[in-house]
Image (cartoon, rainbow, N blue to C red; front, side, top):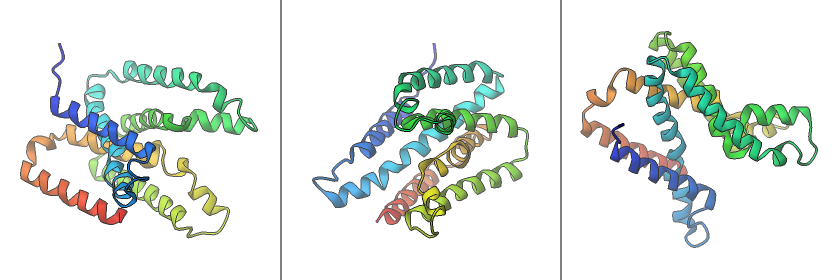
Length: 219
């Protein structure tokens, strides 16, 4: 019988509710200021934390050489839901081969997350023996690239057609620039047992500081 981590389970519930809050525009119609800070602030940590958790548990999967069975389950899940939404992404307005390839690689709407962890896990598997001195800067560079692309799009830094590309979600919300960096962080946390080595007081300080910076950025 697998032991459950109650704290982690509760955290995932809160994160799942945060994702719902983002898509539902929580409080934006009744209290725009608070709603904006939540939807564009606190709730935005949900997906990165989920990806970090995925990477954390991926370490055990890879170490036990269970990646192929794990990947089969994830890909089966992805294939099933892509099939469910097939009428929308394959036979919608102006169907084309390019759109079919795009949706298959990046996922249809919220299925980008599943496509992301498949790609992120694949990258981590191939770089698992690469020195952390190379892997960590590489993952950080990928993350920063994604952030820069997103800001370019939000602030319309470049003229068309670059601005159009920067405003497509898939240009920065993909397996390389988002899923891989956070999954790799979780992978390294488990690999080096950082959770056991970093004092709780430092974790609290970093968490509070991070949330404050997030609210400042959102404001």
